Length: 298
Image (tube, rainbow, N blue to C red; front, side, top):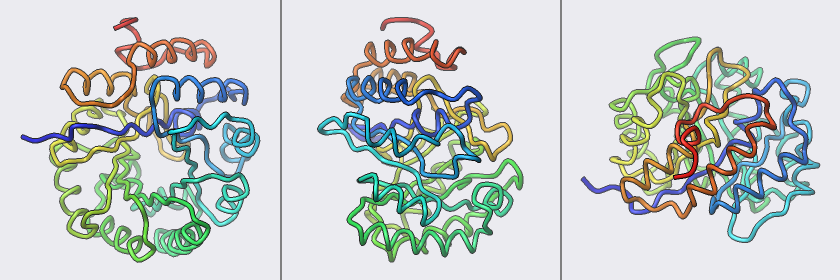
């Protein structure tokens, strides 16, 4: 069994991690957290989304955050967008890397973007073209690629159809997202293999939720398929405002610990990461769900 020698962590606590929190986090706290994460050795940080602030109040300060954050050398900062207005805002804020997603679930697509899957797919194709034309790095993703909290099973054909629509735009990375936390290890393997048949040598990343406790098991299954880019969230924070029960991404601390114990390189300091989690936890006023942070220094 050959696993990737080095794994890239795409830290999403500032976007996915905070978007469902009831207490709005001040911009100053976000700036401090971004700096702490970069100081841990994390080289990819999803800083915000450019979405309707009335629907996702935690992201209302996107422009302010991008203008004030200290962008560290060697760190790739990114943002999530859902429509052309969001892309225009991102371009104006000098965002270098954007994520553009389409849900494979009709029910979730309408809740998340107020569009059908077909409409969202057409919109994404236009956004990819515009973003690439503006010189941005583009990650295109399929939400609910492994199942939907509203619809249950999601046919692989729907996922592959969305992927196929992305490819002519020259995307830089393909992301498969377990937005509802329904994936299992065998399904992870099967869908990665099917996605590869279409995408060839394109980098594939995974966005895994730990809703049912299978996050790290799914990550290991993906490692066995050669996947080396994973979204994780400090403290296991996260959840989609438009998916019932979508609690938490896989914890960055737990992931880094597991990878380190397996001898896989991440370039991330686990003690610094734990310190960052323990420093940020009281700012949210609740306990994080990660295991390793509960144990203290490693």
